[in-house]
Structure formats: structure tokens, C-alpha cells
Amino acid sequence: MADRGEHNPTCCRESKSGSPRSRDYKPNFGDTQRSYSASTPPNSRRGHRGNNGRRRRNMTPFERATSEFVSIEEGRLRLEEMRINREHEREMARINVEYQINELLQKIADNIERWLMRGTT
Image (cartoon, rainbow, N blue to C red; front, side):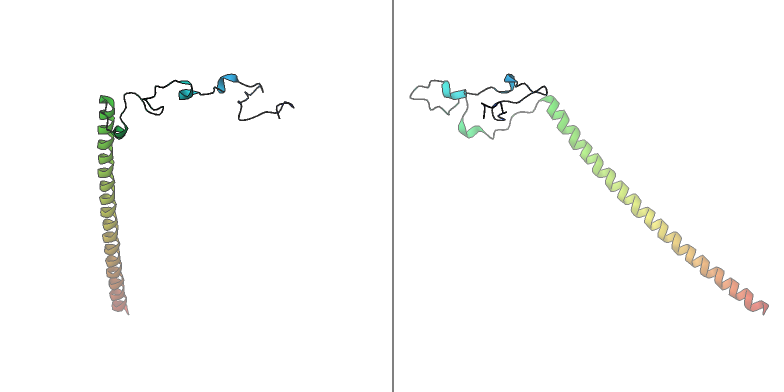
């Protein structure tokens, strides 16, 4: 494959100009080249206990302020949503009352018109 000049995507990436970029491909040998003593297993890390992975770290002042701001904003948005819902319910009740008043006024106007028509005949 490499003999014919074809590109191997697992080797390295090509830049837009078509030439391979060697800085994108860096083999990571990591722990394989380190020498370990017989008492230390190769996968253990110095200074870290295995049972301490879920320990909560202290928040920075910025993180605390951000968290507090987010909780205040969420509360404000929740209250605003409740206010909008109450306002909508009041508006719907007002429209319903206005509709009922208009129906009653129309019935009164129809009755008056019938009464006047009866008196002229």
C-alpha cells in the first residue's frame, strides 16, 4: 500500500495541501518504557488511593458564585413562569366573563326588540 504512494489514514493526517503533517502523529509510549521495581505494579500511580475516585473537591469561589447564580436564576425563572400562568388564567377568566356579559346583553337587546315589535303591531 505504501509502495504505490497511497495514503494510510492510521499513520498520519494530510494537511489541506496534501503533505503529511508529522506533528499530528506522535506515538505515545507512556508507561511501557518506564522501569518499575518489583514491589510497585506498573498500573499503580504514586500519591493516589484507589478508593478515593469519587471524592468531592472543594469548589472555587468562582464556581460557588456561578452555582449560586444558576440556582437564583432557576428560581427566578420558575417564579416568572408561575406568574405568567396565573396571568394567563386571569386573562382567560376575564375573557369568559366578558363573553357571558355580551351574551346577556344580546339576549336583553333581543327581548327589548321583540317587546317593541309587539307593541307596534
